[in-house]
Length: 472
Image (tube, rainbow, N blue to C red; front, side, top):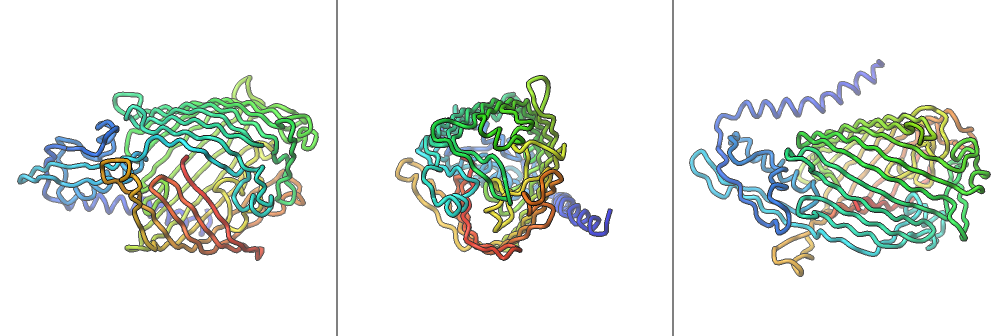
């Protein structure tokens, strides 16, 4: 292990261990305790009480350290907000009698039925569509997304999707977060059909090359999946998923890129298994201000006779968020993926440039490879927060939607390992990519954020970029 590696390991270990030791020291220093005599809940017009008490770090009949109680209230409040059922929540002592207390929990429920007409850009990000494809309206998917949250008041979700255009998608999913009496196991089921008339069939000079056929679909995928989750503690969880996917392309795509599926094949099917272990203490999952997130995932693509591949991938993620003061926040994120074998079909290969895996100001590029590392560092300043009283017109309770507006500066670095493609096709691989800049983030209580970023990279390329993130 190099000196730098030892230093990085020591720093990372310190970030994980020191907060825990400090917390334990605080608990040991507390002398007095209180008995939680009762817990009263209101504001839950639909949500079952046991869904709410499941998120509390204490229960009726518990004895808790007096000094620790405010901390338990705050952690419990964060747990309530992170199940995405409430726009806000409050926990306080309603009555104190010598060494016992009555606790009052008030929640502000969201809209749980969210049907709507939706428009989605088919391209990897907004700027690629706006600049490289001249804002082509034909590259926009349109249709309906329907989300029914909190079905039966049990935090269950039903999602229905019907998108049309050059890229069509039809899907259904249902999430059971709790399927046993201990409320520590969950099940998620999903199925979808996707078909496209316009797809990227190859990359050259880190740019996607597209093929369009307006008369027929050139790629079609159908998939089914099931995921079993195990959450014995508030912050720790494990996920085990199994799925089957079948994808076909037309003969033209197979001829344009014989390596699309490999060996000129026009069909690929796979059974995939995934196992994830997660430790998550973030205060707000959709847009964290403090806490950290750890994830280790193993993905095996290709099991048994109904599989055309034999791939193995490892994913590691570490994110840490700090509150520096009343308005200042900082964070750093590390992500790495390594997959085997080093030579993979174009359809299966990973890399940077997709979804949230990008280096700032490289949004116009895709960099393929069997492994990559990505780090992001940010410093944010909360300009202001305001509440939108939209629900007051439709609900009797006083519900508000908080909107956070933050200014930020950031720096990114990424490296893609590619031992298979010719260098003239993948010039940005096997070298460091760096970028950074300034921006404005707007985050809402409905797990949706808009990010305006002005950045520059080591190539000297700069520009204004727009990013969206959301859970639905």
